[in-house]
Image 1 (cartoon, one colour):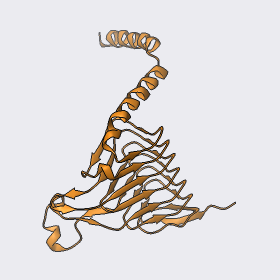
Image 2 (tube, one colour):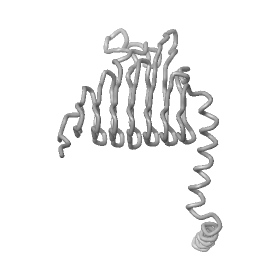
Image 3 (tube, rainbow, N blue to C red):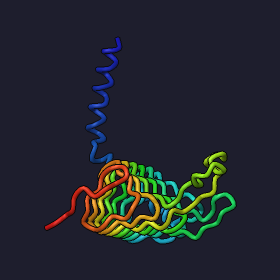
Image 4 (cartoon, helix red, strand yellow):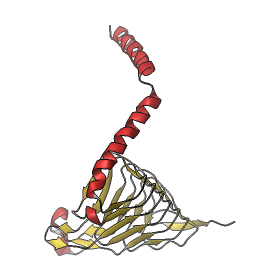
Amino acid sequence: MKLVIKKILMCLMWMASKVYPYTLSERSCGGRDCLYTMWIRNFIGYMGRHSIIAKPCSLQGCGQRRISIGDYTIIQSHCILGCWEKYGNQCFAPSLIIGNHCSIGEYNHITACDHITIGDGLLTGRYVYIGDNSHGGLSIEEASVPPVRRALKSKGNILIGNNVWIGDKATILGGVSIGDNVIVAANAVVTKDIPSNSVVAGVPARIVKQITN
């Protein structure tokens, strides 16, 4: 009986695929994201021409007016953009600037209570974290407080240059400057400055190769 039901369902799905092909599904999702972008851009400080924010996107920290997104940039679905003007009793003056022609992968988390500046042409994989802040420090006094109630502390500005490629599940921590044309391998944790034309990998990330002519 189960086999018969399965065959019937497979037949129905085959017919549905002819009526509603995959390419049509992609186009309908693109139209949905265009409408979503028209709505969410009203809450963002600046958004350039032909940029898209896919549904859903979470804007955190009450500082979305301090977010700037350049031209022809795509932010894929399920991303979090945090710009923290307020956290508990704390107040900040953050900025989050994303350049032109960037492609931010699904489930990326970018969070600033200081300043994060991303140049043109950034490409990221999925589940990338870029954050200039942390919950408290390493003191015993702070450790005795639940993390969500600890003070938000900045580790310093983050600056990412042009044409940088960041692989899946990589982490970029505060106080870091990444030069142009850098490749950050999947799962790498960047804790210090990376010069231009470098390939980095590991935890913590280290230069494994230089890009040359």
